[in-house]
Length: 181
Image 1 (cartoon, rainbow, N blue to C red):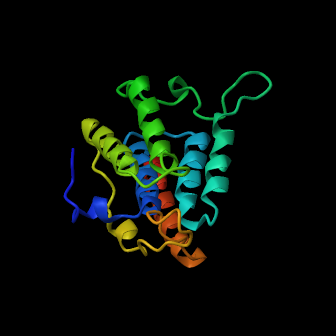
Image 2: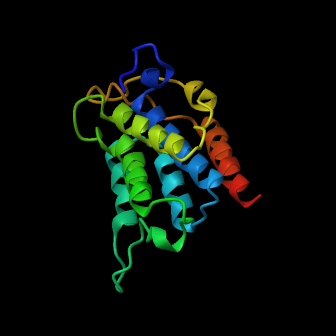
């Protein structure tokens, strides 16, 4: 699915695209009543790109979600069998989580491409396939967009201040909390 350059999703910085992908996962989990502490950690870690000054450190921080403990249990992703409802295919959920992660990780170490948008569109496609409406784009699109703080990362945009981040984080937590209501 190609988007016009003036499409709101195409206009987002890569930082905003990653944050929106995290909100998509929160929306999916809320709509399908999926609860797991590791999912909340994953979503909030991906959302934290909004305040990350060092994208390399931020991406490395994600690594602990794929580590294994001494017993061979994964930290992330946990086995979807333990928390997925029967109407959600485990393979689809794993791919969805990979796409959410790939939005922010696909260009962290390379040139600006269309990969973050590609993965974000796959996230939205998963939501729609399961009858879940994507979250409002308003909170993300209202954030500051492109501003290069390092010459090799012009598409990422600048990190937010703490107050702006708290607003987005609160919206994410509100979405997740709706799963328990």
